[in-house]
Length: 249
Image (cartoon, rainbow, N blue to C red; front, side, top):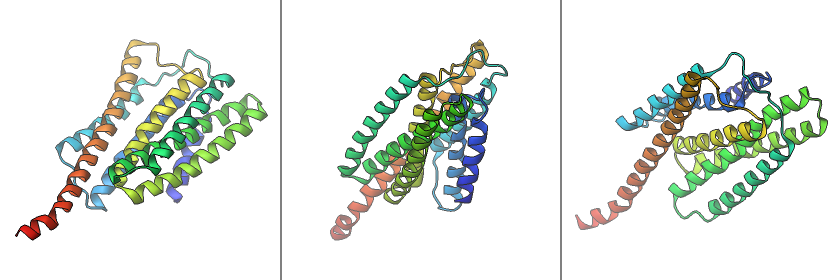
C-alpha cells in the first residue's frame, strides 16, 4: 500500500508541470505491468509461453519509444475545455453504468474478470485524468473546476481501486491488470486530446515514435490479456473434464 501511494505521489508531482502532457505520461505508467509480470512469475509461480514474453517485450519497446517521442518545447497550449470535459465525463459515466450492469450479469469467471478490468480502468482513468485537471485548474485559479476535479479524482481512484481488488478475487491478477491498463490508457489519452487540447508531436520522427510506442504498449497489453484469458479458459475446461475422465477410467 505504501508503494501504491508513493507511486501515485510521484505521478501527481510529474503531472503538476503544465507542459507535461498526460497523454504521454499515462501510457508510460504501463511499465508497471512489466513489474506485475515479473512478480507473477517469481512470487505466484505463473509461467509465460513465448508469445506472452513477446507481449512483455512489446510493452518495454513501447515505453522506450514513448520516451524518445517527448518534445522539449511543445508547440501547443494546454488548457481545460469545460464543455468538452462535461461531455467526456457524461459519456464515461454512461459507459461505466453499462459495464456495471454487465458485471452483475456475468455468467463466467473469464467474462467477469474482463469486465472488472474494464470498469476499474474507466474509474481509475477518470481519477488519473482529473489529477492533471486539478493541477491546471489551480494554476488557472478556477475554484469550481478545482473542486469538481478533486471530487472526480477521489471517486475514481477510491472506487476504482476497490473494483480492481474485487477483480483480483474473481480472476487472475494479470488479466484484470492488463484490461484495466488498456482501458485507462485509452481513456486518459483520449481525455488529454479532447478535454485538455493536447497534441501529438509535430515533427515526423517524434510523431512516428509516439504512434509506434502507443501501438506497442496496447499490443503488448492486449496480447498478455488474451493469452492469459485463453490459458485460464483451457485450465477451467480441463478441470471440468477430470470427473468424467475419472469415471470412465
